Each structure stands twice: as C-alpha cells, then as structure tokens.
Length: 346
Length: 228
Image 1: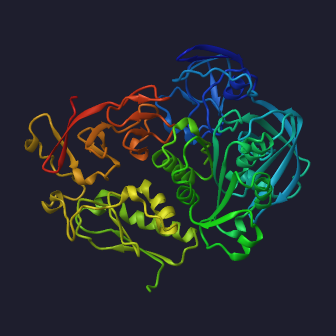
Image 2: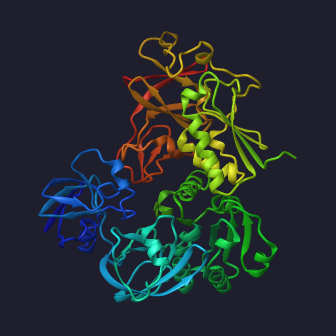
Image 3: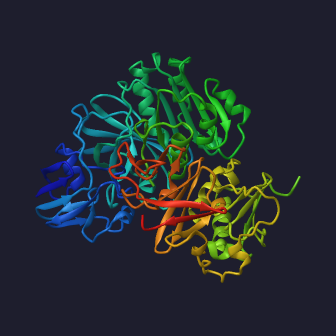
C-alpha cells in the first residue's frame, strides 16, 4: 500500500506493509512523521485521512481527545487497508542522517531479574544488531496480548544485540503481568525500535540534569552510560535526581554509585524518598549517593537553584511527576523547551 | 499536637462553593488519594462555609494554614501529591485576598441563584464591555480561564497588569490555564508551544499566536471587549 502524507512543507510518500502501522512505515522510510508516545496516548501523530481506507487497531485510544473530525486518525495505531492520503498539520522536520530509523525486529526474552517487589529487569536478545540513541525506547508486543507497550532502553551500546528494559508491574496491566509471570524466558516478542526524541548526545555541550520517577530511571541509565563512556562529565556536570516512594522501591543504586565513582567531582546523584524519612542504614549503605525526603521535582528544585546555566534536562516518570517537573523547569529554571527532553507516557 | 499530621477542609456548603465545582466529589478524590498513598495520618473533612463565597471552591490545609481558592478538579492531583502528601503547598492556587476575615463577593451576597452566574454588570463599564471576574480572582502572576458569554477567556496576571487571550491553545485546543507562564513566556505544557505573555505572539515551535481581547480594569473588576 502506498501512503502519501501532505505536510505544511510538501508531500512525502512511502510504502506501508500489510498490518504495518502508518507511523512505523513512514519513520522506517525516512519520513519524519510527528510522534511522541507512539502508544496512542499523546495525540501528537494525529492526521486527517483524505482518501483511501485506514483502520485503527485501538479505536478508543486516549489520543482521540484531540480529534476534530470523523476523518482524524492516530498514525501510531492505524494500518492502511489500501492506498491512502493523509494530512498532518505541521511541517515535517528533515531526518537526521546520524539517527537510526526504527524498524520491526524479533527478540527473545532472556534474563529476568527482580529489582523490587514491583519492578523487573528484562533483557531481550535481538535477531539482529541495533543502533539507538541514549534515552530512546522500543515498542514491545508480547504473544496473545493486543497492543504494544513502550519501554526505554537501560543499556547503551553500538550495534546492540541485547536490549535491557525495566518493567513496572501495573495493577491490571496485561503485559506487565505476563512479563512477571512464569514460562516467559525464551519467548519470542515483537519490537519496533528505536523510537523517541528525549535523547542525549555528547555533542550537546551542556550540563546534564536527569529527573526521574520510578521506572523512569531506565532511560537515564542509558544516558549516564553514554555520558560516562564519552567522557562527557570530564567537561560538564551531571545532576541526577531519582524519585521513589520508600526504601523498598529503590533499585539501580549500586549502578548509580558505579557511575559516580567514575566522575566523583562532576556527577552528583540524589535519591528522593517521597513517603518516608531516609533511614540511616540506607544512607550508610550508599555513601556515594545523597538521600533526601520529598517529591523528586521539589528536591531537585531546591538543590538546583541558581545552577541552570547551560543545562539540558531529561525528565521521565509518571505523568503527574513529569508535569510538575516541566512546570518547574519552565517557570523557575526558565529553560527553553529545546533544553527540556521528556517522554510522557500514561 | 493534633491528631493528624495534615487536616484538610473542603467547603461543601455556603452560597457558591457547591455550584462552582462538584466539591462532594473533590472530597472523595482527595480521600481516595490519601488512602492510596497509605496516609492514615491525613484527614479530609467536608466543611461548612468559610465566609469567602464567590472565591470557591475552597480548600484549607492545616497545619500549614494554607488556603486554596478557585480549585478545579484538575488541580486536585497537584494539591494532593505536592501538599497533602508531600508537604509542599501549591503556590499558584493560594488564596490571598489581602483582607482578613469574611470576604464574600457581591455576586454571592446579592443572592445569585445557585448554579446561575450573576448577570454581568455591563453598564458599569459601558457598552461593548463584558465583566469577566474580580481582579482578585486571578492568581497573582498566574492565569485562569473564565466563561464570558459564549466564549471562554484566559485572564493572565502578568505581574504588571492583566491581559486576556483565547482560552485554548491554537495547536490542539488544550486549556492554556493548565500551562505555565513566567511573566515573559506562556507555555502550553501539552506540546510546549510558547507565546509572548504580553502580546500573544508565537515563539519557538508555535505556528500560530493567541487571539487577544481588549481588557480594562475598573473598581477591582476586569472587563473584556469580545469584538476585538
């Protein structure tokens, strides 16, 4: 099927495979269609179907709330049923040649490791090597459950043959239930990767500020991995704020200490506990980390006051935490949107 | 020392609070949130009138003695996570009328029928002008949406005065009231479109500006000219 996209700066066309989402086909072909969450929620990939037939695989996706016409579709959920023409209300940005276009891959679930009572580390071996940017995510589809979930990569390497994810068990979450269940190791899963714009690149000559809540720390680990590997912290500072509820929700603290050990003067890591005071035993167990009581954006706001020059911020976590952080970064820190990178998943 | 670490009062009576928002529902949402966070040391109570009618819905939180006015359901999450659970008051919603004690608005005292907005005193400002709100109903250095006739208008307190714009972002029709401004730049949080606070002109990635309305202030009341 051929799909033509009319954007404010001209028309682009590409081939769409049977069953392939229009968004994925476009991005795969180098057409930079607008998107953020790629999972039907944010509405950024909204387009108007001008001709042809397209079907949504999730007709009730929350991104529908932005629809203004019967002909509106979400490109991330829609499959072309014959040749289609769609219209997007924005100008398409030119594709950056250094960034890998997403493609469909197969993977096998390998090592799973419990990190906390409701967080699991999951590794997936890929059927071919993949390049991605630090901070990007993959869409994962598991057998027998409709719809893809987005998980940020924890690792960072070129030509990666394995992707590491962090999965939080959600009440009633079919995919997380499955991933926490029995008989999962060795199972084939489908992926579309790499996706996402909340990326870190050492070419950005900026201090790094990471504000993460819960499993939102995943992408930050990838960013820290690359920043350490590229010696970014030899010249620039890193400020990491990791928000959790209580000590039993903590994970990756050893890994964060290891990053710190490489750049003790330039990299600071603060763990914020929202629901309980910091136990002396916790602080004593991780002498290289700083602990504080409070909501992560409030703790970050307090400790970052007056240090926002040349900062680029990366934010990930539950939507209320991301929202509160964005408010603070725009209003108090006065960072321009170009220096605030975030993924809003719900 | 009291019996609770934090004690929250939601006005569910008085002359205007119950009609300015579903305050009974506010109580349920806050209780469910405190319970979900496992906070048995937090108590949420329905309350009688605070004698601030017209500024509601109102919520008061102790021991900080912080008063919130004009609370919308969409604000509850922030009040809950930041203040009731986190201990950090939400400054943008704070009520600070500058007078102590009872502070009812005229609309309330005049006995406007519940659920019915008071008739706009057009004559006070002359033809072509429609009353929007009292100047003290807009949070200082904040912004708030008001219905004016058939349209909704965003009133922005810039620090040096007030300006009036279309209430929805021209991008995806998201409420600008839910965004932020810092006195110079107004940002819609949904997709980060930005506008000049003083002119409504588009900045950065924004592809369209904000429609502005004529605005004037008289005797503490704000009026807009919708024909502009």
